[in-house]
Image 1 (cartoon, rainbow, N blue to C red):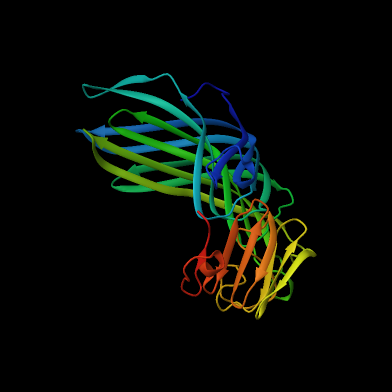
Image 2 (cartoon, helix red, strand yellow):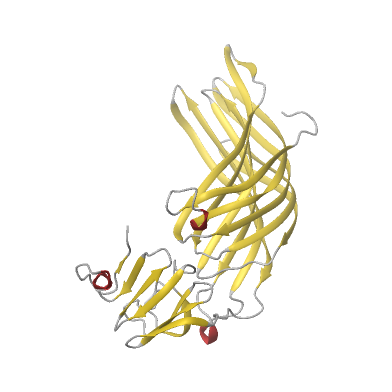
Amino acid sequence: MRPAGASFAASINDVVLYDADGNLVTSDNQVRASGSFSFSPSVELVLEIRKGLIHSFSFSCNANVGGTLKLVAGAQAASFQSEHTLATYYFQPVIVLIGELPVVIEPVLELKVGVEGSFDIGLEGEIQANAQASAGLSYQNGSWQSWKDWQCQLEGTQATAAAALEAKAYAGGVASIAFYGFISPSMELDSYLKLHAGITSGAEQAEPWYRLYGGLQGIASIKVAVLGQELVDYSATIFGWSQLLQEATTVATPPSYTVVSAGGLHSCGVAADGSLWCWGRNAFGQVGDGSTQDRLSPAMVAGLSRGVAAVSAGEGHTCARTGAGRLHCWGAKAAAGLGARAMAEGSAALPP
């Protein structure tokens, strides 16, 4: 249900998927996506209704998708998910009769970009993808079936990561057919990049310390509603395929430090790039890597991988000051380092 050879393109111009302070002017604390891609879909729908009931149903989509996608993180976020619609196309509606009931059918195409996972400052990855995919979903005799076929070529550029993270960025399209007030099948096809990175360096760090994957994912869904009452809501991942594109060949090496502070049984250092690294005793979380595991080698402090100007390691806590004048403390009774009422050990206080 598309003109022959129709293709749709979208540019991803530094789309902000996450903004730590809600201020778009300060771009150094955002998770952004950039790139471009094209999407050329064709869809087919077969629906058989007998005595007012759906007897059989078949919905398929063929599509070519290609382009580049780059993800850059300048902010720290955990368990984060965001999606941005780049463009939505509504095609010429068609009116058909189901019995004596006129039903309006409207094909819709949505192009989008999204991201999910956990992030830290210093994440960067890029992927180039070209894929041809065909997938479908059918219903007959009370059961659902799916089919798939695809070819995909992926290339990944060198990735960078600063701390522990599991990040996934995707771009693609959703082809759907809206039967107003009745049935709405859709097919989503996304190409994605996924970056998994470790958290420490040195002897504790397993090799490789980061891996960059590229992949293709197809999701089919259908919703059936009559007079506002939902009768069917079915969704299935038709295919999910990934390929390892890049991986580190050496362990992550911490930089040299411009400022070093020694505490009770742990130490911290500020690197020339403004990142903060700590190591040693970690029973109260004073290393700042989100765990209470002692670190024999430096680990980057979560959320402070740039902009740190000074650090002070205490008996069981650590405080750091950024160049912008913000004070961060963590570990045992971290609030005392901020001049506030002492908090329970292992907690952390951050300014609002």
